[in-house]
Length: 124
Image (cartoon, rainbow, N blue to C red; front, side, top):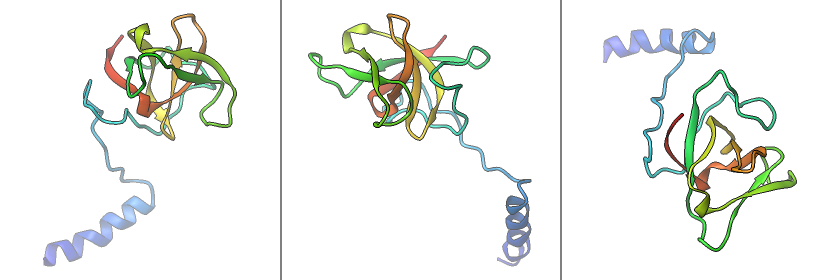
């Protein structure tokens, strides 16, 4: 306990100064979770070519229904496309912005879909 009492204030000071970051390991493929999360969003509505592209499949959506692709991350953004379970793999960013993932539809439209409905299945 004495060591903790000496080290903890130093760790807090380093974290407050931005010198210490706590890392979180990347999500495993098909982990069954609500989708990957991250802090660095891709450019507005498009996937980034410098970063790794992830493959997803639509999850938690009825086969007869679809998942909307929106012009930006948020329900207040206009729908610009659709993703269906039958589309198979969909490619997009490996990071999310407040739960939204930048994706590209099979028809080539770039937009955003909510990460809860996308399950990561691999990389490209």
